[in-house]
Length: 229
Image: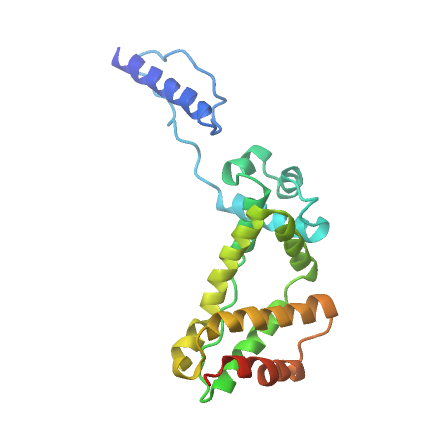
């Protein structure tokens, strides 16, 4: 009798999980209690497949670059990744959450440590690294993200959170090493101005961020803004 009661409880859990909106692995039907002595599989779903997760995120970035944010669909991601659409929706509530997760998954390169003896050396090193990092991004991907952020408030909110995190990591070393030589608010100012100028150069103008451009950006724009008066 105890075995029958336990089996019925498992089936009741299945009904509750469906009402809560999750997807039941066993199909969501209530079965009759098993005869005494028989065992049921665990009611818990299968563990997440990290390989499947990577395939979904990679497919999202590839399609985002190819078709843009507006045309990106969960169906297309499912087809490209080989995952079921229900699998994707179990992980991500909507397209904005999926795209943000795909972007966040791309581990940013580690910024250089500020080992120079002067403020200019360290600002120049960080600016050159940032210019290279942005230049290596696919222009189509950047454009798709900008367009998506303009039209989807949820994506914009998620992307701003990611950008703030990356900006803090980027400028942390510079602030630690040269805090006394930097003007108040120099770190966020560097992240905002340097990134904006480099993105404009790469995406809008379509010109490379060569050594001469980086030196101009550092000497004529950034250092006058960042140095403590």
